[in-house]
Length: 275
Image (cartoon, rainbow, N blue to C red; front, side):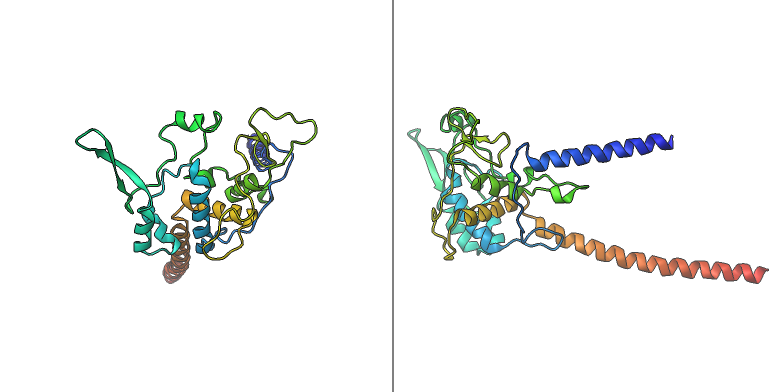
């Protein structure tokens, strides 16, 4: 029986390691570049400047095709924006607000409680505008593309790394021997290396409000940070709560240790007196 459990445990380790390696490689001959993210690790925090720049890249570049259905304008206060700034940002958008007496659709300006509007009215319209491809929603993409390995952490690929890789590893021409399907582009990071999205970034595509030089790499990292925040906006709160729990449990463990020691000391003394 013991040998059987050992074999099962070994199989689990091998399978998990294999899955992690396959995920990290992304079924591609190219390796995804790893980056040092300020928000990674148990004490990591979001770079608010990067979040603001990433929001700008999303708004000016990505929002033409990609939705952000699960993010409300009011959540942008996490970037360091004031309530008034968020209100002003929301007013840049319009939302359907019923019909007038003549049956014409009327619109209202956005409010902080509104969510980012989708660029297309339906999936059919989205596919028709993108050669049949459906641009994914950005709300959870930063987390859904993570490939973390428990047994081989050096093979782990963070969702941000994957996004940066997608945005920065296009080839002008496909390598020799690779036949691209119609309307497809060669990308080192994308699974299968063929992607329907045209290269979205090039140097100085946007003019950052904070004066940062807008290289393709910089824009890719900023929008990747923004997308990871969109997928887990409560990350910092979760980490802070986890730290408090660890501190509380550590103190409680120490207290219980001394209480246990005191109780058993009295028990032993009672037994010695009986003897």
